[in-house]
Length: 94
Image (cartoon, rainbow, N blue to C red; front, side, top):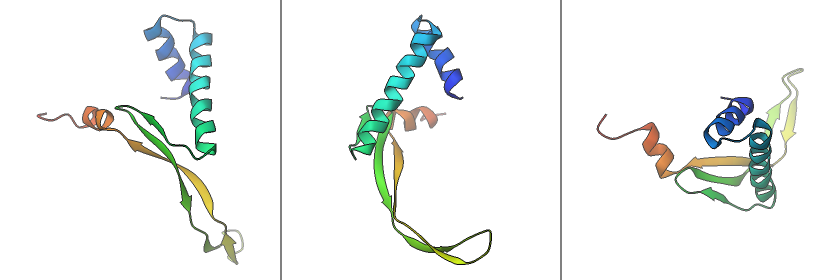
């Protein structure tokens, strides 16, 4: 499922125009992105939590020429599934 599919689903389930559904999705993703830039945790109950993690610097190699190079420290987004999402993927008793 991509953004267009998600927009279609939201418009259909919400009974709203696709343009408005797309705007809502953009607002949601921008709000999450802005919070992560500020290094804030974003928790959506029963769905999951978005956080920022730091990946340490390391020595790698350039795949084009094989020469060693330093890869700098990076901040990466991390998503951890919530209980509701996990339970929907692995229903008990089935």
